[in-house]
Length: 137
Image (cartoon, one colour):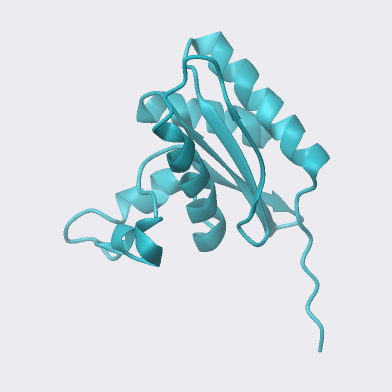
């Protein structure tokens, strides 16, 4: 039996990133915006002028996390606090798991086909930019 998996295209990723960049500009939050495919591999990334260099990897890892666990990183974070069911999950997967807002899975017909990750502002700003980016998918 062969399993087929749809995935985001470069065109999809560029559209998602453009929407994220527009929202980041609108709210004054220079951001890194990354899109990964169904396999969690980077498709496209931007670092806006004045966005933190240290947030490049964070944006990519937020996208990978959202893809790998089929969940927004904001929601995963709520379940990763002490005493919660996923406490300590951020130490798995070679510490690439991000447990703060800004990563959202991209779904097509109910199937996760990629994800977007945003980093550079507060958690609320990153989530706002990621939501705007994901809404265009």
